[in-house]
Image 1 (tube, rainbow, N blue to C red):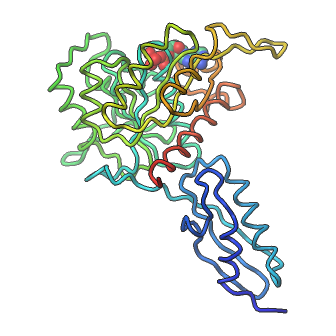
Image 2: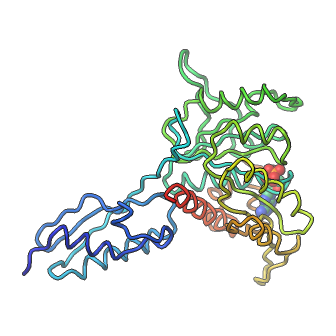
Image 3: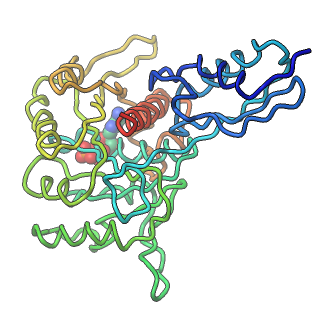
Length: 345
Ligand code: ADP
């Protein structure tokens, strides 16, 4: 029986593509720890995100490619992940910062931000969630956290922790029911403090829930935070378009890459399986084509999304089999994939 060599294993794996990054696993430097013992081969495939939807397919393709080598009769593939860091982010232990924005309020921006963060953490990523929505900081309610834990003297501000996500919110800084009047410089320094003085630790993704709209406040936030990418949430109806397109223009103006568009409340699934498009149709697709960005998800109207928000138990945890949760999980995978494509070029 011929001796199997490392070169043969690498040659076989250089025929296996990451379908999203459209390059082979060897060129992408994803292959680690090749071990060969007689006819047994083991190695690790290090993906660019733990939230990779094609994980299973890549594993199978890699396994089959190596099994096809003459002399190999068993292959053991370990799947790992290391999220590439955006080198625009300096002096922070955060690899990617992703903003979730919308042209107006009430479209489900915070709901998407919360479920995106929790879904990424559920996949095994290290995730933080920063609620910068000064007009309605609902993240604490939606994550079921009321306050920050005490910060020991001399230490950085300890974020709250819920569902494996580190949470910081502008809502923790004010008493409930108090009006929030933030002037530009005050907001700027609060956000700077959120970034620099909170004990985020090592994060793969920091999700930022922006205030709705595209005024000065939003613009100054986008300028203050070194954003790796933006996600825009909109609704299907025509009247949402102009507002949502202003959010597209804002990200473009600030040179923040738009990872994609999320159409929320796209349809209501009836008991007989038919879908009713209560809020019209096509808005997300139209916005995506005008923005030159992909439509990442159509999220259904789902009671469990609403109740998860109200009860502080996000749908991806509370009701993972629901249509809403499945759509949110798929969204998180698409966002992670688009983010790594952006970083890898
Ligand atoms: P925004 O941040 O854009 O102002 P929110 O995320 O606060 O919007 O959502 C507004 C309300 O709509 C919340 O009560 C939320 O639970 C509900 N909601 C959002 N998306 C959905 C959905 N897909 N299905 C059902 N309810 C939703």
